[in-house]
Length: 181
Figure 1: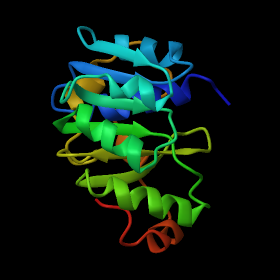
Figure 2: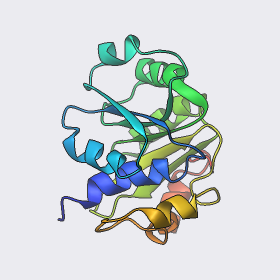
Figure 3: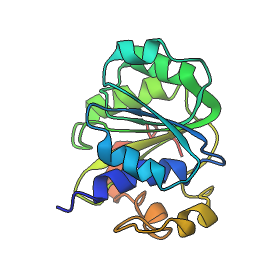
């Protein structure tokens, strides 16, 4: 699979859903490609921390518009992410395979106490990620101007963005009541 697909989708889905994505937090032990994609957004400030809970604990409250997270999220991590994320912020995160229904439903349940919208989306490389938003809907509130103005992308575009959220009926039925859209 093409290695550019994952970082483009992890970054641009969140940043192009955000009304204003000035401050981005990347939680990753391998952030080089993610940071490169964030840099395409011009004057966006990015902070990178390691995939450990302790690395989030020292961050300021309400400091980030978008968080891109490769850390396994549990209730403690979710509360720390909520603390550092602004009131209209977005979280894009890895999650267990959609085939792991019980694990995902538990994850979505405690994320649901912090986010209005929780939706899995297709990365395009055979895996999915979660888009969680406190305010904006990833298909209704896409910033088309921002998505169309990004240069040099190999996969992501303003058509791929909403299409990534299309899920088959078996997923919709299995996750009815857990996905918040």
